[in-house]
Length: 183
Image (cartoon, rainbow, N blue to C red; front, top):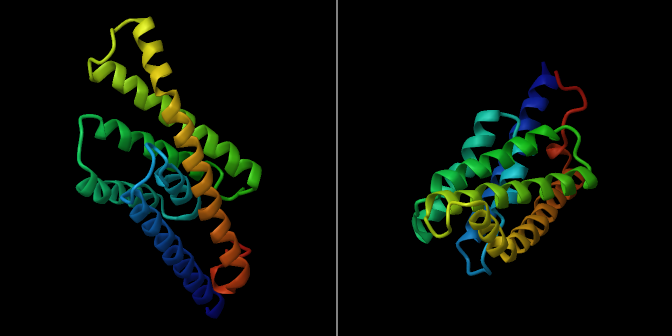
């Protein structure tokens, strides 16, 4: 019974620490920054990878995005942007129990790429900024490339900070370590 209690306490400590890191990342979103150089993609990956409860892992980034958008402003593409970040949570969940630097790097690249593809497609389709032709779609993606590099840079930097900070905290504070036996 004591072992089960300590596993529950450990899970609670891990969850609270992860939530604190996610809220810190969410707060950084509203700080001045270059376009798309934000912690949001990394925050969603981290949420999916670290938070054990799937509902919480999906809900927390949405709440963080919404809270930031209250300050930043809302726009027509919000549903697409939120859905894209939910895909990042699912990417994070895919490697949740197999976190390595290589897998986190691959997940970060995949998350940035899907965000670029999904949101630029939505710009082309929904905003009437480009002709609804293959060349219009290509022009939209080409115009979005500078934002992709910022997205990738932000995701990579913040993923390193979130996952690295969490791994370091696990080493320093035994209460944050994942129990060896999980069923």
